[in-house]
Image (cartoon, rainbow, N blue to C red; front, side):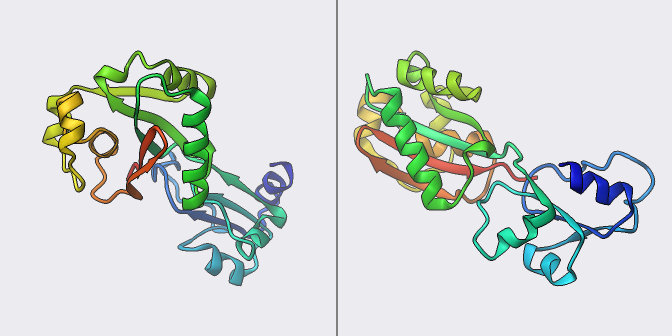
Length: 201
């Protein structure tokens, strides 16, 4: 943070790359200083050879991209929502493991998770409560009728039989994020079903 801030103060070439998060972070009426330049991608920013960089993303950088952090920082916006369905009594450890594995598969950062979304009958599920309390995430739950009004690409009669909803993780995350496309529609792993969405701005 300190050397990047120094580059700003010294009016050096500072690259900004934003892949997700709120876009109205510059609250001033005047334009950005001319030496702070916004680039559409990390690759283009690297080609410009800035003295410092700020990357705003929920995504884990690959090996070639990390070169931009030689004098740079990554800001993790809270944009990831996790839809979670689970069997009664599923442990927090199992839920955490599925979340960690899924985010790793997507190359997403745990630090960008904002909320866990589920069905109302799971609002007292101890494992879910322990996970959201550990990480300080929002815990959002919807009634079956609300979930059934959302788009569901993979409806389940079995889930409906036990919950009154044709899906839990997928529609819950769609309602919360209002995203047209999910990063992961649905994955079943052990006692946990997970969906992943990014809040669009």
